[in-house]
Length: 172
Image: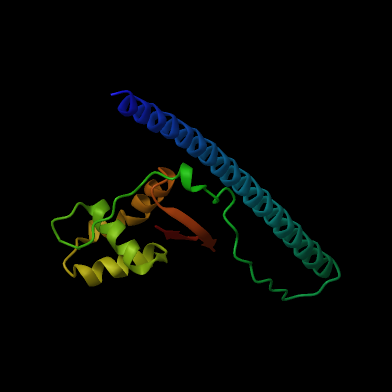
């Protein structure tokens, strides 16, 4: 009986040591992940600053040319990066997406499925995929699509890759 009790104590001690070791590893991984997010966020903010500086420089050159009387200056507006678009995975809310499309799904589930299928896209891309999946989808639903995608992004359920002009490119 003593050897069984000894074995149990040894196993309990080993289990406690392993749990402690795992807790340490988890804490280390969490710390590394947070540091990586901070570094990515800092790099992203620096990129935004450099972009804004370049846009300001283009504006100054454009204004100088206009001041010199040059006519017909046409500056192509650059794609604007989305400020604050970086969301660490921990801040995203899981968005369960069905594996099979059905016309009986809720509209939000249909939107999620369509976005998953195209990987990323703007409101027109998602609408086109929805029309392809369900040709008889109501036009009223499609009119609300921009608002629905924006709402899903604000809730952290989908991601925002970038902005192209006035259109946002969403992703799962």
